[in-house]
Length: 92
Image (cartoon, rainbow, N blue to C red):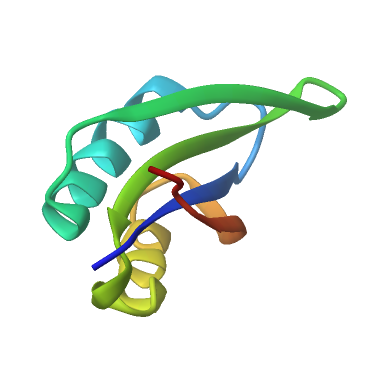
């Protein structure tokens, strides 16, 4: 029963979209999915004022795919795309 560290990158529809609203809704969905409330968030500048939201969280490897979580996040207002950019097995 290993843990994995997952990084999700969320692109908003435009630079005018409020990332904090997306972050709040996404964190709630991740917490429901992973049963873990510890997360790290960061904003990544892309171009012309557009910023991506990256959220790093830990989940149980036995949960399998994050496809259902990604689809759920895509349905949040203002979200253009969702991509898992990194998955690593936790050590320790």
